[in-house]
Image: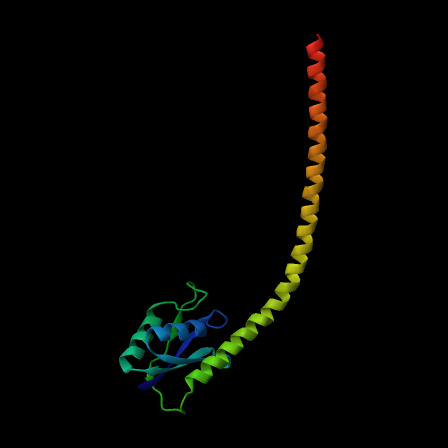
Length: 160
């Protein structure tokens, strides 16, 4: 096992599912990764662990393809040179669990305003449903009137 480090830079690399996609994609290459948003430096730092060949293959795939979950075709990113990583030992499992907890927090943070919007939509749907019922009743009454008129016309023409 070797460990390598590289960075991804670009305009739209945050809040587009890049780290999520990197973690998922790395598994396909039998590589573990720790992608970290460095907002103040406008980059995502990636530490990868696995065989040198697998890491290189993953690196080249990321370089040639937009791996962000929310694709940004008009905003490409660039990769730094890949280097050996000699920093402190990375607990990839702990990182993955912390990452998942953070992503769940984002979901909850975004779900609360959506819930309020859904309540508003629900009340509007009730209004639409009531309007449709009123229209159905009005249409039913109009059809009854038309039916009565047609019967009267039929009676009158039958007598003539």
